Picture 1: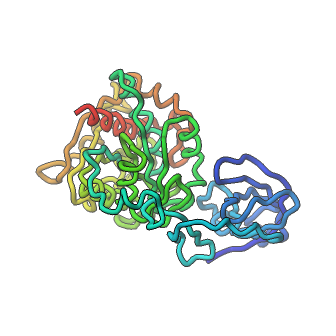
Picture 2: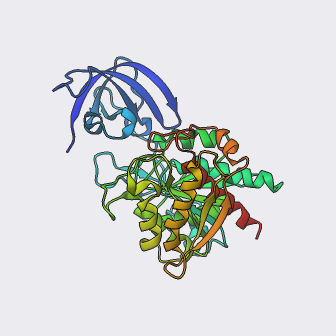
Picture 3: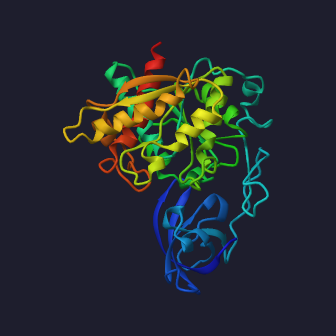
Length: 380
């Protein structure tokens, strides 16, 4: 279940809103799967701000197995002086419920929220474009595509809200991408939904997260995706990105305009993820019961034939999502020209499954194409 270690903080590293890197000397590394000194991550809102010399209790389960968490041990509790009690305040949303680190927060839809009256009977997104993506790594690419399309049309950059679901990391604080995009002015707000927390606003469901994006934040478009990390088992249904289909349904039932961003790869060695991932085909083809626009990237001709061949594979794979077999609308989107340069200008590092823009350009071009199409919808 949980592999515990204790240790002493011997150094501090990079910090960003909501998170602080630490270097910790372990009291007992154990059976050799862990080094004597580890990188750790603390969320000060949950466990205080450990200083050099402080003792900490660490959850090292994923680190010991070489799984996820960015290579961090996670600070589960201070081992010495306790942080002060939080200041009294409104809010009764409990997230990470019934776990030892459950947090009580003020939800945007909470009865005690100043926005409760706005959201109590809210039921309509008024045609708001909602880009749905499987992986968190799509977020900066979608926004880059949206800003590129707006600039090309001579329009101001859209106000973008990120609605974070709870299939990956629960704390939004874990995401350097969210912090960097907000600092750069590329996103205006992050709304954490379900069991996820740490956004600018908290919401109980994806539905109220979307409504808050429209009626509280005033977004021009929304990106919905899970937080960093995802869980997959190599089975048809056992992956956290299945929630992308449910997000399409939520956007549609609230009269938004769902845009289903394809998870594409030209570099993944696994057949099930080459071209269009089976995650996209299952989430949009089987789980999404409402129609969405599916942007299909049209790549520039490739002298070596790589992107040309990949483009043909993608087109063949997505055919099943459109009539007469499926319910969605396929939309060709030019993924050539200067779009790659727009992606290279991202204020945060582009990385998906350990691959960067140069390693797997198709992954980011496909996500950017969804952002391009979402901005085109704003002009309708």
